[in-house]
Image (cartoon, rainbow, N blue to C red; front, side):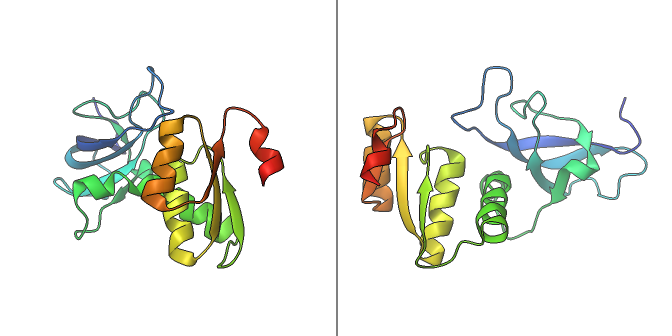
Length: 164
C-alpha cells in the first residue's frame, strides 16, 4: 500500500558505482511513475530521476517519497538522467562549496569512480589542473589515456604525497 506522498516509479536505468556494496546496489536511477499516492504533485508517466540510499534501485520498481526525486527534463535520455545525481553533487561541491575556478589545481583521490569522473569532467570544462589517484594500474592508465591527466598516482599508499 502506498502512502499518501509515495511514488512508485518503474526503474528504467540504474547507475552502479564501484563503491556500491552487495546490500545497496545502484543508488542513482531514472524511471517513469506508474503509481502514486493521493497527494503526490507529479503525474503518472512523468519521467523522474534521483538517488536512493536505502535498498538501492537495482530492481524493476521502487517506492519513494516525492521529495526524493526530480521530474526529468525532456531533452535527456533515461541513461543520461541516471547520471545526474552524481554530476549535480560534483558541480555543487566544486563550484558552490569549494568555489573552484580556472587555473587552480585539484587533487581528485580515487578518480576512476563515478564521482571522480564527474569531478574530472567538470574540472576539464572550467580549465582546472588535475592531479589524480586511482587504485589499480588499469585505472591509472585509463585516466591518463581517456582524460589526458599527466599526474596520476597510486591511491592505495601515500607515495603520491611526496610527488605532488
